[in-house]
Image 1 (tube, helix red, strand yellow):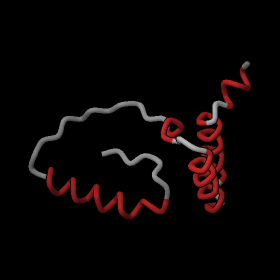
Image 2 (cartoon, rainbow, N blue to C red):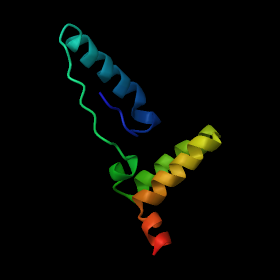
Image 3 (spheres, one colour):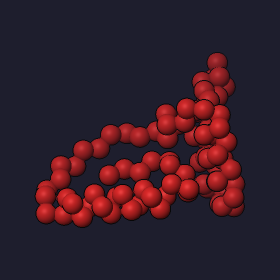
Image 4 (cartoon, rainbow, N blue to C red):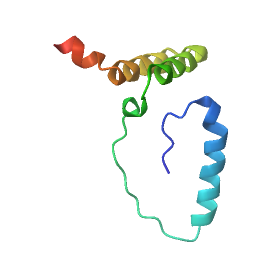
Length: 84
């Protein structure tokens, strides 16, 4: 199960859901299928980007803030604009 950039507010609910899924699948083998995940593709609005940036800034973690800035820039197409 992949939990991808749902924000801190949804984290408890997501972890509870992951635990439930894990308990149900405990005795069944699970095929490992992975796909690339870019959180920028999940951001569908300026509000989503703003919420992510706010949460990152509130952590005071420079690495998390830098990552959130990069994801926000990609989600808004800023990387492409900067290259052009």
